[in-house]
Structure formats: C-alpha cells, structure tokens
Amino acid sequence: MSVWSFYALPVTCVDFLRDLRFPLTIQRLTGIAGCLAVVVLGLQRLRKTEQKLSVHLIHMRVAGQGFVVGAITLGVVYSMYNDYFRKPRHG
Image 1 (spheres, helix red, strand yellow):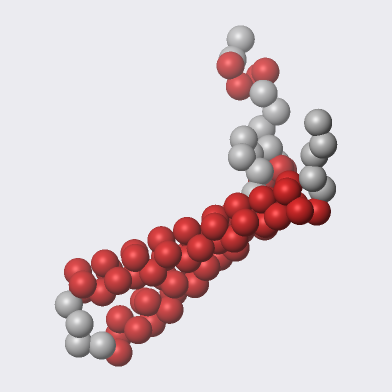
Image 2 (cartoon, helix red, strand yellow; image 1 turned 180 degrees about the vertical axis):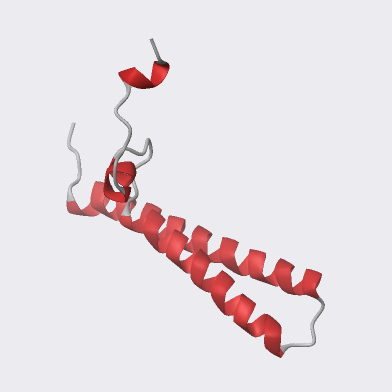
C-alpha cells in the first residue's frame, strides 16, 4: 500500500493555499507581494544602471527584507491593538 493513498493531494492552487500549515494572512500576503515588487523593480532598474551586479543584488535583498519586516511589524502592532485596546481581556 502506498503512503500517498492516505493523503488527499490538493487539486487546485486554492486547495493548496487552504491546506498550508501556516495560513496566509493579510500581513504575510502583503510581505510576499512587497518583496516580489522590490525584486521586479530592482531587475528593471538593473538594466538602467552602471552599478556592479553584486552591489545591486545586495541592495535588492535589503529592500525586500525591509518590506517583509515592515509588514510583520504592522501585523504585530495591529494584533496588539486588537488584544489590548479594542477587546481587552478581564480576568
């Protein structure tokens, strides 16, 4: 008997995203989209500059990481706001 027979494989992309171990929240989607936008814009800018490739890739990496960290920070601040100011727990 095959191991795969016990598990239902996702058929579509929507099923795959729904079955992820870590669900994609709005903060994660924003971070991923921002990181991809930084990479795309960086690749477009690469053709127009006389900068060395290694320096340009370092700048793109730092910009992408900054966007993801910013999205995570906004998510944490939003969660703290919901936990402590909108719906405070008593008890």
